[in-house]
Length: 177
Image (cartoon, rainbow, N blue to C red; front, side, top):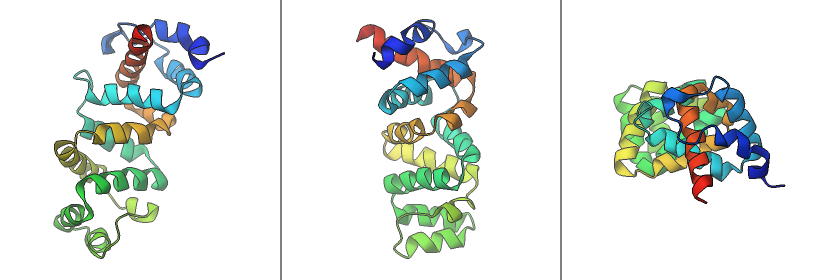
């Protein structure tokens, strides 16, 4: 039995659903969905939520996720942003914000931050970096979606509207497929 056989009925209730039509149990439905669906499918739904005009801007949502993340996850998403923007640009950004330790680390030839260093970064800084990254390379949304698809418990902190949009996007895609 495939994953769609397991949760097809669950997704059916999200067909055509907008953020305002979020069922009361969207958190539980999202849990069930992420346990059955492959991470790539979860990522597709997240990308739809990140791009939706019914949710806050991508950079704001990424900062929200970052704020809820542990050191490993913070480092992972920061390193994704660094890979997109380049260590030199991110180093300059941190230097301007008074984070000389992080700036020095990146300008010293290191291309990644450690979980310990990532804990020092404020969510507002991630929001600014994400805005720049999205302007430079819109596929950062897909990269962040793939990253957070591996951490669905964190994704639930985005709220019912984002989860509903993610589930609706998957339901729509399965209906077409």
